[in-house]
Amino acid sequence: MRCSFGLAALAALASSTYGRVYYEETFSDPASLDTFIATEARSDLGAIKLSKGKWFSDDENSIGLQVSEDARFYAYSAKLNRPFNTKGKDFIVQFTVKYEQDIDCGGAYLKLLPPTLDPAKFDGESEYEVMFGPDICGSTNRRVHAIINYNGTNNQIDKVVQPRGDQLTHQYTFWVKPDKTFEIRIDNKVQEEGKIEEFWKVLPEKQVADPDAKKPEEWVDGPAMIEDPEDEKPEDWVDGPETVPDTEAQKPEDWDDDMDGDWEAPVVANPEYKGEWKPRMIKNPEYQGEWSAPLIDNPNYEDDEDLAVFNIGYIGLDVWTVKSGTIFDNILITDDIDYASQFGNSTWADYVEKEIEVKKAIDEEEAEKLEAERKVKEEERKAKEEAEKEKAEDADELDENDDVKVDAAEPVEEKAEDESVEKKAEDESDEEKAEDESDEEKAEDESDEEKAEDEAVEESIVEDEEVIENQEEVDEEK
Image (cartoon, one colour):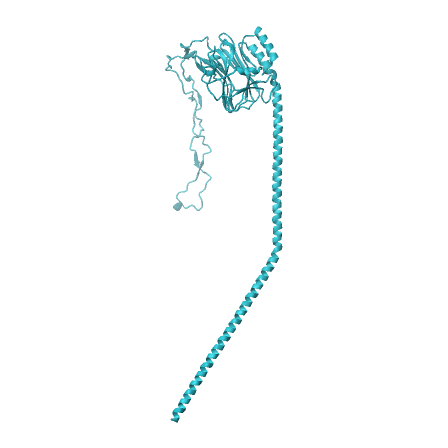
């Protein structure tokens, strides 16, 4: 964010009243982006730009450094105004982060690098003094990193501080004090505080178990509970049997002892049975608990005055993000917590309410837009359903009309079929009649032929008889 006049006055006041500012960047100057040098260690870096985002609280105050490309690594570094060795001083790093894109997976932390850094070779393996800021990936992998380098080893804070994952601007502050205590704040509220050596495992334990100690022979480490030796079983206690014969059962009338054997009553649960008796349990008066060796001062422990002392020359942006849009702003490194508070108020706190109002208005506008789109889709859906319903009704009506036409055509078709059947029957009758006449004529012809044949035979017989008679007459004359 930027607020040129107010920050100028604050900077002037800081030079006379507050401690020293080693780095301060509000991105009020368009040339400020040029102070962040891209590494040459890799060629697939995402681009950075100055942006106030899609929504903002103030046209001038909201501009910050934005990572602008999806699924990219970012490795940029900027030199401090002067190197900062924190020995004997308060050390404060503070900046704001706006996850405008509704973050799903991406870091928004800063690395504080030694003065010996070569910006051209800066990458994820480069040595750093402190790494601080939010890191979010999914719904469960979320934390505010607070990593400090001690004797060449990076050490993460033992406690998990939850970051803010909404789309508003939030301020993160890490304050390490000369007495080797610390505070982590989010939006000016303390999230964790305490001694460095209790939250980071950087020094040996002050006390350890005495390796020469042995458990005394009379030490009783169990059991913790024992049976009461004075407890006695009540005289009326029934601990068996669990079942008894049913006194109300009767032998069936049709039971035959010779055939069925001796009859025995069925068993039922013993109503007086109370189970196995056991004495009540009491605390073992001799129990001393699990034995552990007494603690003694660790001979290997040595306090280190340089614990949490950092030597810083550069600030580095070394993150990966899936979805672009994160905005870094109001970066401050100082040795004065009061100045850090004043700086945070003038660049962030004074604009919080306005940003919330702007975001709320945008969300309401977006909700109205989505509701309007939903209504349009709902109307389209209803219109489509109505059209399909009408089409189906028209189809049903057409089917009904076709059925009526079919019903009307059925008598005509039946009459035509009947006439066709009658005509076919008449034709068949005529054919049968013709066949019968043909058969009669054929029979008559056959009869005439047979008659002619018979007449011819008779004539032949007569002729033969005449020949015989003539022969007989000739014979007589002879």
